[in-house]
Length: 141
Image 1 (cartoon, helix red, strand yellow):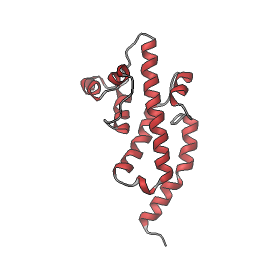
Image 2: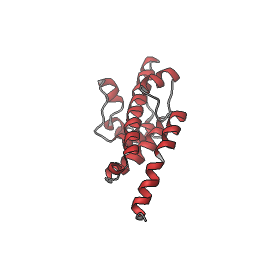
Image 3: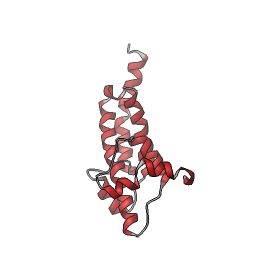
Image 4: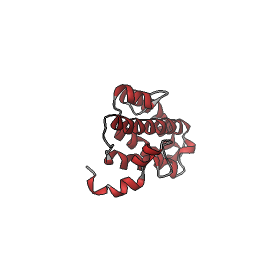
């Protein structure tokens, strides 16, 4: 008879396959290139992706994700997807002559990705920085 902890871990791990299917259906992860998906579809569900990734990050920070390899793989996929979506949204706004300012999505994304995540492009990094988020906290909607 497995312990309650082992039973709970088994239940969470068995949820990985349905989560992967949900990911493909609702844009939490969009295949090999999240950025190309976002560019092609002009959107992705940034907030839903960030929320799912936030939950997985909490498991990882608690040291629970090591025992759940399927969810650890899902975390890697969602991290790539969220980063690609954010970068694509910033680029699309710039292409339209606008400054990206979805601060509620940025707040969720930063909870999910952490402060250590940084885009490679300096302009995108500035748009998605924790400093910009902190200076815009009164305009969150």
